[in-house]
Length: 549
Image (cartoon, rainbow, N blue to C red; front, side):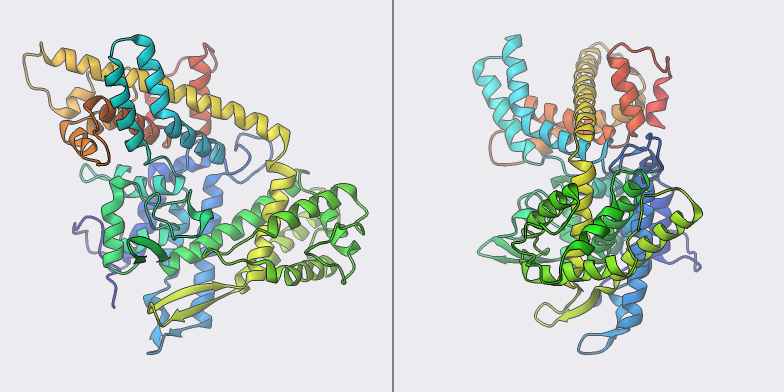
């Protein structure tokens, strides 16, 4: 099948520009979006406001885009013709679409990085019970009404929150590029390349537990997933109604691997510079181990550095549970991975001492990062699957495990530390506080609109109506009015499963609106707002418009 690479979400004509391909247009639209720009103020692992030059979500996304683009060029060079008919690989792998995917893959991640994502997931999980507790305390509703509303919220809240789905939502439905329709109106091919997890919640491939908490499509964007399947960018195989297998678009696989490479290598580079990850001691520990080491059972007693020995035990335990995207175990390749790492330690790929900041230290660290990116890129090839008639990315298991090794080092020395944990706990509290406050203010706005409409003497257009209630930021007001319109509420009530009353539908619409707004903020905006809610006068009064910037 020849897929339509020019078809867009909304079939609108664009100005003919022969010098720009559809992929170039998509790249420019993402690059110039407000949501992409704000990633410079969003945490990758360590907050961007910290003293060291850590990668933020913007620099991370730029590097994922660059690695994905270069990897696509490498694959196209190695495999110019693919399949039984020796078709040009460009029909499957285009470096520009891979670049678009890298730029946009994290565009929906909330302030505070993964800590923020986990907190928003918790907020949705607790939403029905928290609402019921608050409603019961006010005694304004009967027990039956409270329980009916709680059940409706429970049914709706299965939508949950997921950063990848929020990324799809932003580029497809929220970003303000033109008056109507909203979204960037990307090509379906770009949306397929962005979709690491092309399914809705609960529709992941059966038997692959690690994918249960990952998805790229909320119910609101489910029609786009249907179009991707119709165009065969995504292939979903069902057996007796259950999802048995999902074939992603190969450009999404390339971007996903580029994301793993960047996370493993560039974050390790950051932490080594900051003195948090002792790569030079890891190198010595690898050199201490004899080649006869049984990597599956070793206690690493030959490693002289006690902390590195404990680290290796932690890493080995973590890697022993590693599986590929389709759920296959990778343990058979562990010995090969350790031998490759030992070879890297012996040929000076690893830094030999702590980072000193000298020209020589910077040069060696750059050489280390480059060698790791080349190694992990070289672990890839393409494979044509005759049964599905699709081109897939093949990654050698030892390559996957080496990337997981460096991610586990980051985990052990940085992410699992008490200092980072305390900071993330504070960030989660700030996020929940701002969420609760904006939900309460949004309810009050809805009540005021309803009350005022009864006495209003003239019809007020929706856009003007939003400007009459200015306690909330303009973007949030518009989300609230759009999501609580009679048409939107009716759609939520028809979600199925259980009876969803108007109260439940409205409460859920408010929660989604507030989360959509929060996912357009930087760390510093949310932290400042939380401080102001606690009565802080720093950094002084600001116009509410700063929250819409």
